[in-house]
Amino acid sequence: MLTNIYHTFQNQPVLTLFVIIGMGYLIGNLRVGSFSLGPVAGVLFAGLFFGHFGFKMSPGAQSVGFALFIFSVGYQAGPRFFDVLMEDGVKYFLLALVIALSGFSVAVLATKILQLEPGTSAGLLAGGLTSSPTLAAAQEAIRAGSVTPPGGLSADEIIGNITTGYAITYIFGLAGLIAIIKVLPGLLGIDLKKEAKELEGKDRGGATASVTDITVRAYRVTNQEFTKIPVSKLREKYWDGVAVVRLHRDGELVAPGTVDYLQIGDEILILAGIEFFSDELKAIGEEITAEKYTPGLFDSAQVVVTNKKIVGKTLGELNLARTFGVFLVSVKRMRIDIQKNPQLKLRKGDILKVTGPAAHIDLMGQELGVVDRDVAETDMITFAFGIVAGVVLGLFSVKIGGVSVGLGSAGGLLTSGLIIGFLRSVRPTFGRLPDAARWIFMEFGLLIFMAGVGLRAGGDIIETFINAGPKLIIAGIMVTLIPVFLGYLFGRKVLKLPAVLLLGAITGSMTSGASLSVVTAAADSDVPALGYTGAYAFANVLLTVAGSVILLF
Image 1: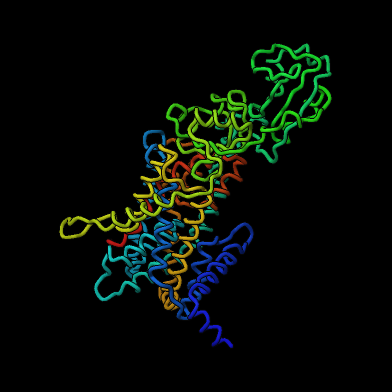
Image 2: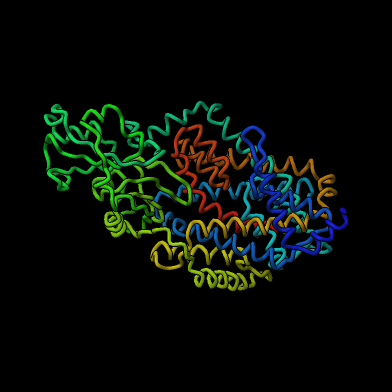
């Protein structure tokens, strides 16, 4: 029976691939306390298991996965990568550069000092910094022939060394970084919650409270006391800066700022998070049905910031609720939710999810950038030819001192993705790739690639681990620890970044979303995500390039 199962898997590569991906997700979701490997490492280990028993994957399928992943990484980073260099993002670029260079140097030195096999340095760098783009770029450089294996070694042997280095060091790279991020603030006496609150500039909780539910309610003014207080004072006392408040008098909508005092019988419509409706607010009068006011009120859309005049302005300056009559649900930057407090400065490519009348949202879109109403279609022409351009770009090389130097497949696809992502932010009708589509391309492409990596390296993983396992573990610990500490010292002493932003930026420089969640939990704030998104775009680019370059040392 086992023989029949084995032959079935051998003859059905699609079955094998999706079993590996499914098993990988199951392995990645297993938790020990708050720690889990995640799907990428899970798929790698599932692939190693199947590879140990002789299963293989078509190199073409693995290359397709690689292309989808690297192009999508560039596309995602494009809107921020070029613009951020013109802003204070230079600090995050320098931090990402310091961490990438220090990890690169430690991996190269450790490989030479410990006399590890050729190619292991790339695996050390990728695993120690938990960087999937580094692994993908290194593997593809060998597979495509951009980097020639040392004499006497085959491409498969080098790829096996890269994979082994990654698989063995990734666990500490992930768990070790999380542990460091957890204990470092306590060791240094840093109060992350206090720092986050100072950066947020919060003077009352309602202005930045997270919205758990959105609802609309209406009240008729019956309390005489509220007619004696100026509207400006009522706004100062009750309004949280986010809720949408509309006043109707004698059946007509009253323009904001034209009424000094409320009158008995006025009807007030409020669109807000459920937590806004306190008992104190309800004292204004009787609650009435809001149905006659709600038709057309609940359109929802995303507004993408592209207008140069808006970039750099704060949410407080824009005052979306009063200016446009829309309720701000969330703000995303580089696919990360960030705190929507009044002091938040908007950047190109930020995505503001809003609820309100469709006409109001359209007006907001005209002022800020473009309205995205969840159109599902992907611009497949741009997507396909973008990958074509990336592959072609990677084919070009120049001779320097007898050595061919070029971008390679990884660099070409990354560059193409960066350019198209940037152009999309400038001209929103170009190169449309919705969030959900980008996620599946990036995630599925990476998982196909990782499954292929595991299958190719699985045959000799045990032997390699027995021979070099302890040395790899030591080297991996150094590759994780040294960049973190150097990055922290550089960020504090040279860049003068607040610790709560710096720790977020360090996790971004090491492309570790799991570690970011630890920082945000410790700070009880989304402020660290600003540091993460600042460094993440640069880190993906730098570490992708490093994956190919390190093989030359």
